[in-house]
Image (tube, rainbow, N blue to C red; front, side, top):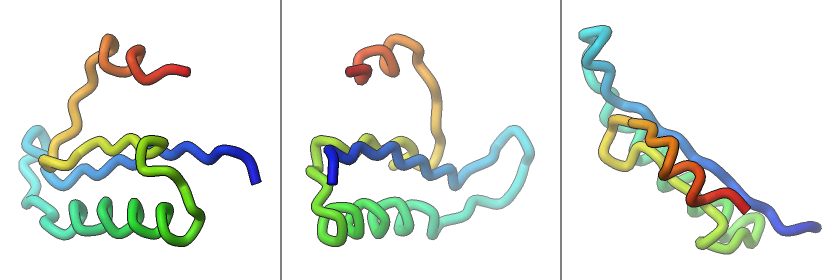
Length: 68
């Protein structure tokens, strides 16, 4: 199998829509990361996680820094 890379995104807060936060999304983010590492042998440095604080914001400069 080739070199696997993953982008994991978890959004648990929706302040613009005024919806109640979804607290378990962050748990899912870490569970999927763990499954990728131990189940598919994906290297931790090949997993980019967004939304660890519940809100995902985008910075074009930040995204460009992760391009390969």
